[in-house]
Image (cartoon, rainbow, N blue to C red; front, side, top):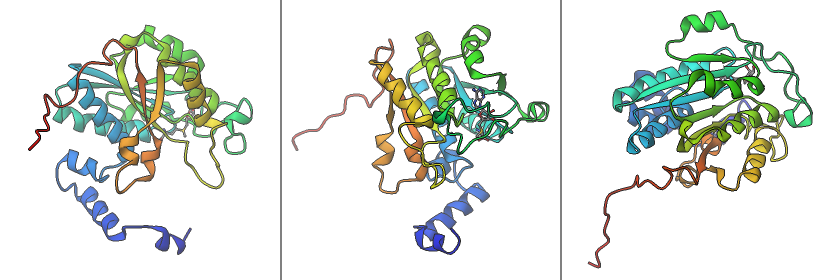
Length: 271
Ligand SMILES: C[S@@+](CC[C@H](N)C(=O)[O-])C[C@H]1O[C@@H](n2cnc3c(N)ncnc32)[C@H](O)[C@@H]1O
């Protein structure tokens, strides 16, 4: 965009200040997270708020998943956020990264956006990534196969947050189908981030292809399980682009869905 970005970028001074706070790590982690002064604020947001909900519900161990790892920068970033959140809250966070390990599969049809993606994009150097990873486990293979095996092989702690970055409709649909597993594997509400639903003039994401179609079809097929936009973020005075990419998965019939997590006994006296 070049010079045009000067005119389109709002809050230039505020952005520079946030950049400074992020680089110098000024203030607490929750403060920096709340103003977006952390690397990948969207990843941090879902980890932190998923962990807070988990604690309110009394869980002491949760899982966070990244669907689509590529080189591994996102998974390493999740390790950073998990470390910070564990310093604040008494719970442990397990991390799982799903990927073929060999980059994107061949797009199945127009719904996987072949005008954007090609087979083999985003290959992983699994040995190099494993050498850098701490706690995160790589679940390698096509998600169509690993999704079914995952619960049996890992018996994961309840999943509290999910990063969806598979790019394709078909892969995202397979990942979302994991919400059909036993409810003990999930919090009643799961914080989700979808990477490929806003995009550019080239990607032209829409409701009929890609990750957005997978979300729509999931919602249509599940009367009591829904992925909903994060209206509490979209209603903020200053809306960050990634707020549009946060969705909350609700399992309305989950046995913990109705457990009280709000403020105790608020009153609004007449005077
Ligand atoms: C855009 S990259 C992920 C980038 C990563 N989240 C990051 O932030 O650095 C998308 C990844 O999804 C993986 N992927 C797509 N479809 C898949 C499938 N059906 N099974 C497993 N992995 C898949 C590809 O291998 C690719 O590495």
